[in-house]
Amino acid sequence: MLLLLVVLLLIAILSCPYWWAAILKCGMLRRLTRLARSSGYRVRKRNPWIAFSRNRSSSYDLLIGKAAKIYAVKLWSAYHRRRTLLLRETGKISERWESYPPLRVRKKEAPRVMESRPRPAPRTKLPASLKKKAGVERLLLIYPSYSEIRILREGKETRLFGGDVIFGKRITSPTALSALLTEEENHTD
Image (cartoon, rainbow, N blue to C red; front, top):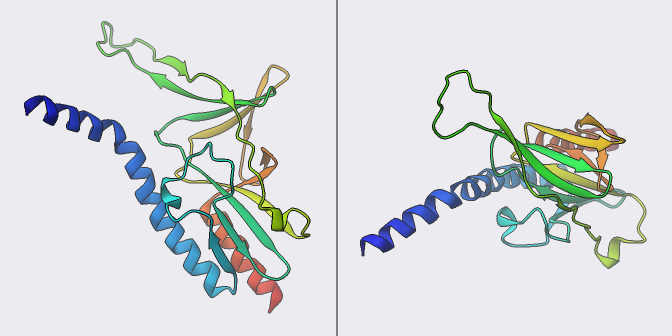
């Protein structure tokens, strides 16, 4: 019985970042859906468990649209704080973070820079009904956010910001998307 309790506690500790990200995404999605609907947009969630969506899924998670404009939104989450998302020219992605040795021998010991194994970037597909439609904008909504997003081009690292394009999608945050939806509403009035 004690072993089962230890295993369950270990599972709870290891899954904590994923649950925390899901809780944050639920609140953000609720606010964003409410704002979009009050601005006259129709919101369609592609998955009822959208808060638990994976970064590696091949479909868009949200479709927010009016007659003239449709936003295809792919959710992307940083599950650990203080991580950097690194994009490579080869189409692979990885995460980078600093790690301190568990038992410091010297107090002024510098942290080690760790990096995850590079994986292919996900290829997100639009639904067949939207492929030939004009006015479809592809967005990559990053929340919870990384400390930085960097791209490695010709041996040099460059920092990316909101509005830059990666994976064929424009990087955005919940605040920027909210502003985009309300700005669109103000232009149509």
